[in-house]
Amino acid sequence: MRKKITVVGCGRVGETLAHILAKKALGNLVLVDIVPNLAAGKALDLMELRPIDGTDIEIVGTTGFAETAGSDVVVVTSGMPRKPGESREDLLKKNIAIVKPVVEEIVKASPNAILIMVANPLDTMTWVARKVSGWNRNRVFGMAGILDTARLRCFLAMELGCSVKDVSAFVLGGHGDEMVPLLRYATAGGVPVEKLLSKEKIDAIVKRTRGAGGEIVKLLGFSAYFSPAAAAAEMVQAVLLDEKRIVPCAAYLDGEYGAKDIYLGVPVLLGAGGVEKVFELDLTAEEKVMLDNSVKLCSESIAEARKLMVPVPELVGTR
Image (cartoon, rainbow, N blue to C red):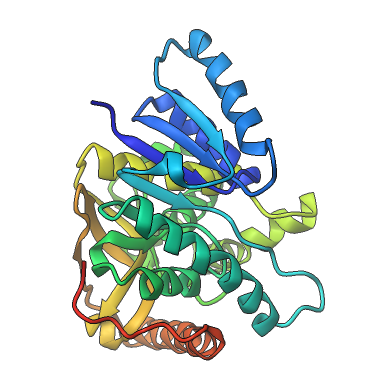
């Protein structure tokens, strides 16, 4: 029997993710969006693509969650972007109002699923999703680290004039200005990039990586969607194929890195069980200061979300 994947939200990220997953043929797809006929139309378009790709998966689109029942993986991309002049609290209110009922429906329809969050603000919305679901922390996590790392690897390869395949790197921390690129672990062809690039060039790449999302918004007028969708697809594949990938993602911390009850980008082992292990790295004093700042900012955002949420019972055990 084929696996079942649900994508909630058929905006730019959701539709691109659905396209990538359809080409990978990892399982049958269900697309969900509240806009009438939107998910159904995109699902039919993808169905008609199958003879060209040579795949036989089933793809359906719906406005409800009945057809998502029994999903193995659910990816939530739905959410509102922050508008000019809008406060973070206003954005949190809007996206909590979207994410909370979506997660409640997912819990009812697919109680054994793995839940991957893409909605922003990423770390906070992932925390909200776990709080609402009551699921074990390994089953609820967020996409950010793979995207941020891909951007760092891209900019390093561009500067070095080498293949991205030969560049290895990763990013810790929150998704945004507070991310912590660990350049001393970055290599090109096994050679530390600190041996290949000047500190000035490395600092410029770090700055560009932190502002990569904003750079695309300035060019397009809206957020990136190709690379975020590809990052989410990589996570879905790692889970469904039990690949045991070591990748950075927004994982729940319960004492790791000195943080509790928050989601933060850290390296994890990603497989059929979801986040099967969180890896703690030895950090330099400078790296620890940067990560502590990231923890502080994420904690503040989550504290705001806690106040704004309609009271949700504290986790009692886990499912």
